[in-house]
Amino acid sequence: MYCVKCGNTIPDARLKALPTARTCVPCSSVQRVAGFPLITGKTEYAALQLVSQQEAAHLHKMQARRGMGASLTMTREKRN
Image: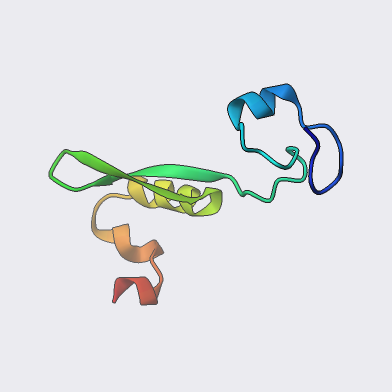
């Protein structure tokens, strides 16, 4: 199968992983995403939120904050 954008051959490994792929890896417009677990109870992880790599890095940084100053890195809009 050939890429619909550039016409190069789509590698067999990509077609095996994504049988409906119509583009090669370099032409793919899909951005990488990260999963961030959402805690719905006191200790339960019940859902996975898909976010961009940049947002995931920010969420991990926020998760590491503890104590009184935990909200200092939040913007004013997010606090309200």
